[in-house]
Amino acid sequence: MKNVPENLEASTTVAFATLGCKANQYDSSFLEAQLRARRFRLVDFKEKADIYIINTCTVTDRADLDSRNLIRRAARRNPEAFKIVTGCYAQTKPGEVAQVEGVDLVLGNDKKARLLDYLELGRPERPMIEVDDIFRQTELETFGMASYSKNTRAFVKIQDGCNQFCTFCIIPYARGRNRSIPIPRVLEELRSLSERGFREAVLTGIHIGTYGQDRTPATSLLELLKAIEATRP
Image (cartoon, rainbow, N blue to C red):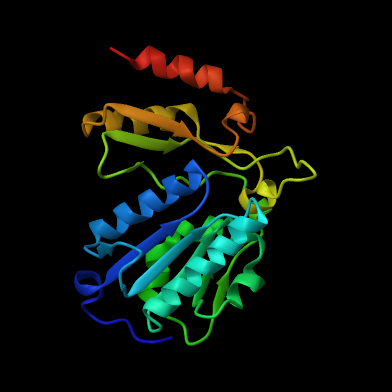
């Protein structure tokens, strides 16, 4: 791998492009906040950047095409940039993604939270695939709090994955089986957000109607909402 400059965090520019659902937006929002905390400088995806992160969707063929177009766009803007592709397209078709010209790293959905570790390793000499079997994930690895910096609204991902396996749908293969955050941890996140001044929180996930069905003992979205209501002053 190429060496990482000593002043990487202070001088490096990072650009995000995010396709797809609110859960994907949540993931990107957290990663942006994580990079800001490490003093990376975030720039618009239309600008030249040192690092491009494309958080993809794969719910339709059009989403795959849009993802590939974003990758090529980043490669044209700065051929020497570190280009990382993550999200559902990367999870389900990593080999196809790695063949797109300009891709340096294909990162599975379960590895997004380790983005900083991969940045510290530096840009690989050839395309690298870091994607595991998503069905091995039995617990939801939470990023913690995420929010949109220009808003007073925060997004809290309480659930991920789906057990329906509908014939037409690729989502379980992209996001894995249903996994939920325990109610006490959701309440803790909401309390922390309130203390930071957020006035509104949006509970998000892939199939939040199945929230809690994977827990032992099982719970439900209704029970979570009752618990949240009980904490209000």
